Amino acid sequence: MLKEFVDVLIIGAGPSGCVSASHLHNNNIKVKVVEKTKFPRLVVGESLIPRVMDHFAEAGLFESLDAMNFEKKLGARFIRGEQICVFDFSNKFSEGWDWTWQVPRADFDNTMAQEVVRKGIDLEFESEVVSVSFEGKNSKTIIKDTNGNLKEIHAKFIIDSSGYGRVLPRLLDLDTPSKLDPHSSIFTHVKDSNRPEGEEGTLISFDVLETEVWLWVIPFSNGNTSLGVVGPTDFINSLSENRNNAEALKNAIQLSDYYIKRFGGVDFLFEPVKLENYSRSVKQMYGNGFALTGNSSEFLDPVFSSGVAFATESGMLAAKLFIKESQGITVDWEEEFTAYMKRGINVFTTYVKEWYTGNLQTLFFHQPENPEVKRKICAVLAGYVWDETNPFVKKHDNVIKNMAHVITLEKEQKNKNPN
Image (cartoon, rainbow, N blue to C red):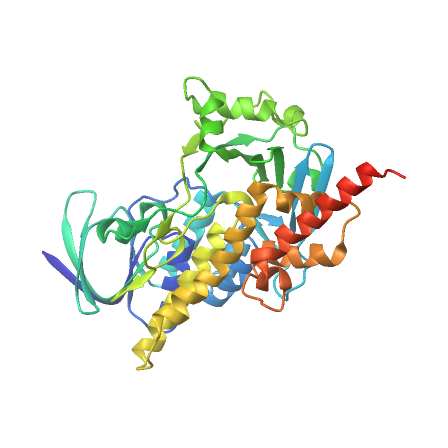
């Protein structure tokens, strides 16, 4: 059997894997990336948040992505009936990027992967990990190509960026139930032939159909738009008696007063894809000789587009910590990797939970707006969830709940005493 020896084996060539591979390569670390699929390939997660731009820039991937002229995302809009709340990333509490992209992930990921190859990194497509074994921190991974040929990859460290493939969690029995309630989504792309001119046609929007059910609308610069519905799994299943994804998505669009004219009756560019009970978690995010990044470790919910940001954050961090270790510096993976990532994940988990309780929606749609509160929430939505000078990060456990409670009490008082 053919054998290869590398410093770091990266499983998966999505954003997390490419950021890791590029940063390691830039620091003279010998890397190999194995990717199970053939690119370009369809994947969900088409709305990014500004924090990811830090990672693309630092990894040296920004220029190749920017040249693709993806749709710029300057903020996000939330709609609930007649109520509209728009967040502008340039008006946020924390320092950082004030824009990002809305991307067809097939093109986006392929651009990144090709840039990684152009840099001289060994990236092998259509190669599946069959088994992994560890001797101390050193690993032996068997991979199989499309012709059934096997190869041994010997590495000092593995970064698992396999996303929904969850290679190491599966092989090492690391999966554990998510703390979030079971939700599912159905999505497709459409040719956006009724797209309005100007900002209205390009703005990413989340249309709240019921407290726990919402439609996403993500316009791309190529004239297509991603449409998806998200809600409790039972509700998503109830949208079509025959569990027909196309029928279910059409029925969801019919529930949107705002978008029915633009998208009612449009043809789907591919059979809608269903992601059922998508939230994921793991027992541990690292072990002797490996680290889990991106969706391989945690996936929360698409409502605030945090998936790719956590993927690139953890991918960059794992790469940096390996470099530090390879220089003979002791790394406390529990504190420097798990505890750090969990701080950010916990903030977003609170926001996801409070979105579905309705408390966060109470804050979003409250009139008159409180500009300072909005700036602080905007920083969280932009992905700056490690900035503990922001009370909406530091006190995330209680601040949303408490403010929503105060607003609700004030409304009740007003209703009792209208004068």
